[in-house]
Amino acid sequence: MNNLAALSPLLCVVLGALLVLLLEVLFNKENKSYLGYVSLAFLAGGAALCVRSWNKLYSFFNGTLILDNLALFFFLLFSLAGAFIILLSLKYISDQEANHGELYSLLLLALSGMMIMVSSPDLLVIFLGLEVLSVSCYALAGLKRKDEKSAEAALKYFLLGSFASAFLVLGLALLYGAAHSMVISGIIEYFQAGTASKTMGLIGLGLVIVGFAFKIALVPFHMWTPDVYEGAPTPMTAFFSVAPKSAGFAVLLRIFLDFWGASAETEFVFWALWVLSVLTMVVGNLIALRQTNVKRILAYSSIAHAGYMLVAVLAGDQSSLVFYLTAYLFMNVGAFAALIGMSKKGKEYNELEDFAGIGFKYPWIGGTFAVFLISLAGFPPTAGFLAKFYVFSAAVRVGLVPLVVIGVLASLISVFYYLRIVVAMYMREPSPDREVTIDQENPALFLVLFLCLYGVLQLGIFPGNILTIIRMAVSFL
Amino acid sequence: MIEIFLVFVVFGLLGLVLIFMNRFLGPSRSNPNKEKPFECGSPYLQKDINPFPIKFYLVAFLFLLFDIEVAFFFPWALVFKEMKVTALVVMAAYLSVLVIGFVYAWKKGAFEWE
Image 1 (cartoon, chains in turn orange, green):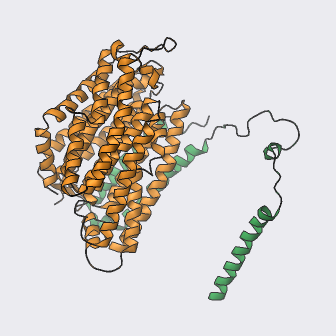
Image 2: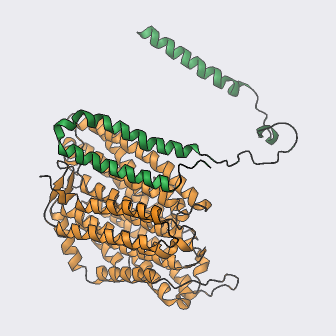
Image 3: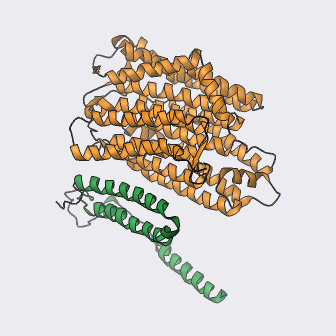
């Protein structure tokens, strides 16, 4: 049963993190790029080990770490996200006074935390992974140590995050008391079997959902998101908006895979999540309308997207959720990459007015940004359209018509603020008192932009291959 | 039993009542000068909170690092005879991570008291 191969991708990433930490402190060079390349190498090694374990179902620690295909798919997704973020950080950190080599180490540790989260069926181990992820994220948010906003972001994230973790642990304790099991399948069994009162289990599950809702930023647990996203260094914002969210949804997917049964308790949980989903879609999109800072707009947009993903969880359709997460990775990292492109040494342009006329002045950044925004809004032929289409059609198939109607209306609202940025880029004259010049000497950034562009179009036009892989991944469950 | 419990309840409640009675019954005539940290008549020269260097948080961190380490050693010491080589490997892995943390802290200058 215990096979060291199950541990190898995780070990590879953790070793990379430790090595980067040692290199940083022993050599202490001014130019930190080589640390980025070392981390990329370890990520690639981890990804290669994942590919080799495909279909093998390795496990370790007596079944508390199981490499099924879904976990492997998420491993690959996280490695890709991590690689994008590393590429985006290479130049950013020296330009924006965040030149700390620990970034790469923390990033790899965060990735290892997420890997633990998605590959364990045991909620306690999942919590362990979540904490590894969260603690790394708190430090990453405060990477610009001299910047007040960055410090505020880190502190807010830390305080609210540990509060949410406390809820999660209390929920786990109650769940264990009620179900006598920490394993997800045991908890599902407990909720579906018998007629005894399940109030304690229900309270426990509710608290667990609150903990995860915080991490994936569902309304009304989203208050931290805009401030943290705005204050954190932009590549880290891209990371927060994509990776912890995917990991959180992977866990929710596992919990609620076979959960929706006939009993009254599961019905109750269903409607609770239904309300969360509606609130997230509506509130996220409505508040985004009033924002004038592009980073904050993207923050609210990521809240709203969590609402759409929750629809997939409610519909019980795993492949559409995984597809949505994949598409979201490409379009959101791409959008943030374009936003990072809007900077020069010591200066970032994040306000909406800065984007006036950018589409013609800097056609590559403007053009790709426009594609990513259109994809986030959900227009064909981009990945965002197909992702929404799969999620909503899966929901209609199981009869969630009111939810889908609300979702479609909410995404109609979202079109306004996404297109507002596009309109600013192509149809506004730049105001003479806001001089925007950006430094385009950043090949890694353009590599990420084009890879994301490729991903968005590939998933939007020819999704067949990826869908086949995703179906293989979820068929194991 | 119940008497002891009642004593605790009564005294607890009494404490609460005494704490808040003043606030509820007394008049509250506040003005900005009263809210100042020093009510001495002359305007103060600095903000009420000054940033000051804290060295002790580093000490606290390092204490965590090495104290938790010992806390993990005790259960390990109870079972390592049964677990044989596995126990050795697990503890070696754990210790190597700790040592890397130690080297990092050292090289970063966490032990220099300046």
